[in-house]
Amino acid sequence: MTQMLRSPLSSALSTLATERVGLQTLEAEMGGCLGETFSRAVERIFISPGRVVVTGMGKSGHIGRKIQSTLASTGTPSLFMHPAEAAHGDLGMVGPEDIILALSNSGETAELAAVLSHASRQKLCVIAMTAAPSSALAKAAEIVLALPSAKEACPMGLAPTTSTLLQLALGDALALALLERRNFTANDFSVFHPGGRLGARLRPVHDLMHTGDAVPLGTMDLPLRAVILEMTRKTFGCMGVVDSEGVLKGLIADGDLRRVLDRDLDNTKAAEVMNTAPITTSAHTLAQDALVLMNERPKPITSLFVLDDDRRPLGIIHLHDLLRAGIV
Image (cartoon, rainbow, N blue to C red; front, top):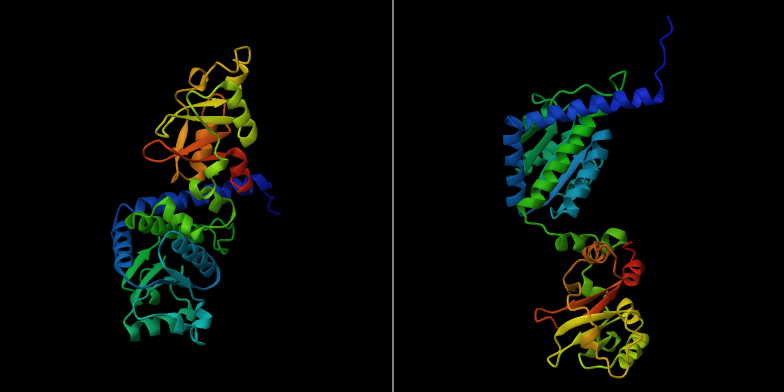
């Protein structure tokens, strides 16, 4: 009898359901022995002065590359070593203080033999990530992250699907636990991600702000006519109002001017028109947070004054600066 084919959506939902069960099983295992060995692995890597050398073959290798990339970008020095290349010179990449993180669902991957032999000779720590705690890999390891047995989403049970998802999830958990153990901050993250939109979002405001004569400023007794001239010259659509000590006391925006254009422009002073509670920021604020400050008000603003600890203006940043930097 011919087997009825499932619809693509039915197949997709079945895959997701099977993998969800796998993740739930992994989460449950973290409450027991796996959680204990996981904590040992985190601490062992944290105290190591060397790098984490991630290795794996086939699908485990692809997952290993992603884990290694996440480790490196979150503060844990690491590299990926292809096990098939290890015996042909790449073992030279491994230092005496490095830790081997080896991935193999079966734990019997032949290509890992050279890596494990080298680790044994050099007395290197091996952390195994495998679903076979009695395998050759597990026996060669100092710490075994034993993945739970989980049904593959592949209807034939052949293509690694749920098993590789669990490797990936546990690898992410390892990288982020180390991130927190190292007190790795967003500023640290920006050092390793200078490019692209992510890098732009993590740049501090002082890298993007306008300074010096470009900043639109005036004193509290400045007549409105002079305020208009200053705002026109500087083109930010606003002007900061400072006292005799250079401390920002308020801000005049285009909207504030429009509401008072019927007044005497020569006798009305900036202090009479200014908003006395403008939104400001500091030089170390991340660009992405500056964007949030601009947009979180009922009526979004387009410019932010950047102040020092004494509320003196250091610069000004405009929405267009964030656009040019690729943040939005």
